[in-house]
Image (cartoon, rainbow, N blue to C red):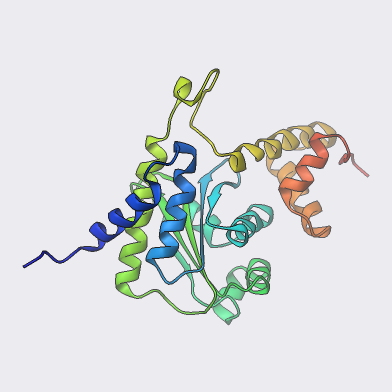
Length: 240
């Protein structure tokens, strides 16, 4: 009799299909796509844990990318909490009292985008969290036990994939540090903008980031878009 396929076997099979023949830079996005195939979710994204905020790395589609960017802008949400605590954070009903009280602004905006549940899983070995895998669903509800095991297996594969991405000269001439996707490299502007706002306001890094976030929220924008305005000198944040 054929052996029964285990959860890890199934996860490995689907991810192998998704990533076969792709460039290293495509791996995180392909694993996000595999997560959508394996689980009852409509989207997935992955972010690295950065200084003061998550750094978006990849997503399965535009809405997942938007929801990830929203948490960067707000500095709040299941992804942020999972990265800070190193534990899985499941928001099972973003219009329910429990989740709206935890993340009122994020819950409202995510629900407005058509997402009713978010499942954020830390990437790491239990002692060090390097980022999160975030899963999005259009209907409320918890994942079943088997689905949670599948999600954790996907997160384990994602962690291993990130560790295995090219470093240094493997990333091309003049490359240094961990490989980053174009999405992540765009967020270098956020750090540049933080430095410029620190100089303009005589503020610390945390206060400068809060100012960028506040401006983004007040103008219905994202922290990335506001940072681009600051870096290109179309916006200054001098003291009033």
